[in-house]
Length: 325
Image (cartoon, rainbow, N blue to C red; front, side, top):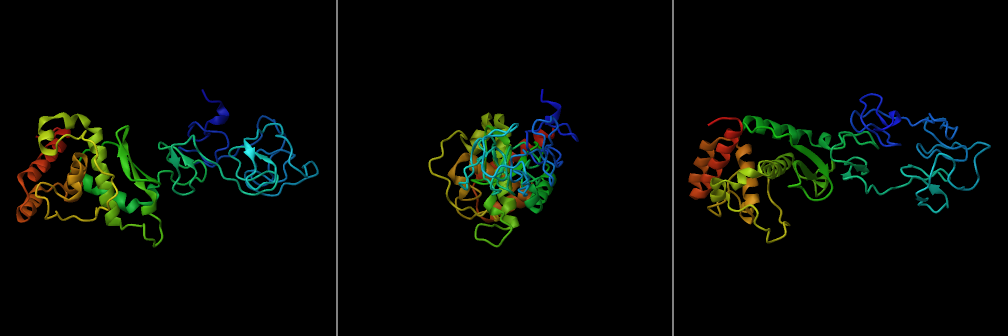
């Protein structure tokens, strides 16, 4: 069991030493010299320091006093060094000090023990964290895409899709879902820059992208559905290997059915059975589960019978999850 010091005083969640905020409730933390190990605290931020330090390693303020050393020393009592200062002053720094205690310059760290990085401060966070322990902002990045998430939730409710407790995270890298964590949907951070840049996409495009990835998450979460004969006849074998790299740009903003490829709802759906299901799910939810409107459009664009069957299979399965027939 963690020691009482490593529990949040507000929500009792587990903490790591020298986190600035609780990762559960977001409470701002202060790490004082409660055990009287160093006998010194910063005048400004109140965090534990050493009398030998010239600068506070947590807030970076000058705390020089007569006991401070004019040059770097070995690790004082209560501290240990993990590497040298990145600015070359010769002093040692301890993880996760924000500043060098000898020269006062900011430090950077690798956060290998964390699963990912915060979309606000680019420091380490885990997927289960709601609050970044370093900057206190939303660790998931959902505060940056509220408009798209609100739209997605509305469409899922109107489409009567039963919630499976999915979790959307804004992360650097490639957007996607893995079968190991089917409820975690990662969205590429550079798509939401907050500035007018080439990489940023529109809210409608972002909504379509999230719906597409939710289709993958829904499929992984209900993997037994893929073993049914009706699913295999409609979509094929989902364990099929991807033959080509997924490097093409897809217009997820588009709500109209493509006129090419009569057996698929979009050209991207033809790349793999899993992509076929994800695109079918996206269109089904985006069009609010209204099969009559979809089928009318399929008829006008001369879609084949397999497309009708795919939407019927998905529609019947969604209804079955709610106990409807």
